[in-house]
Image 1 (tube, rainbow, N blue to C red):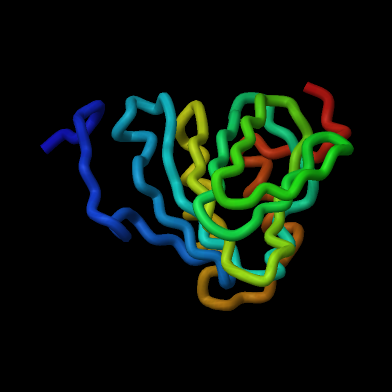
Image 2 (cartoon, rainbow, N blue to C red):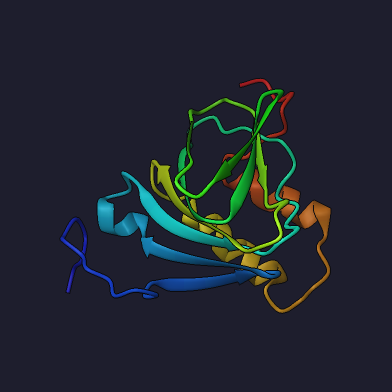
Length: 155
């Protein structure tokens, strides 16, 4: 059955789970379902999660809504700590980073547009999902594959 661009209902906790280190991500709405318009994922980030270094995207945009805990967000040179109910929209080409510097798990609802960015997590899980030591060159290669560039990259 073709599920492309059809309604979808998921029970609590349902979706495609992806483990990257101690972070658990659950793809709630894959891009294939939306004809690549968007994807929706939840992040469960452990306390002390350092997050990625500052980066930007040429195409992808993010919208993050904090469901639980605290999320530290960097936009350009500005840093904010968002608590439950906090929201941030990150347009393409804006340098950003995020982390969980709180004492509890941070749970975040993530909308990425256009779709396809959720496949980045699949690649991270394939590379590091079994407890492999993080290799920055492998991460860099994966990032470039998914429109993720260092702050000084010129488009």
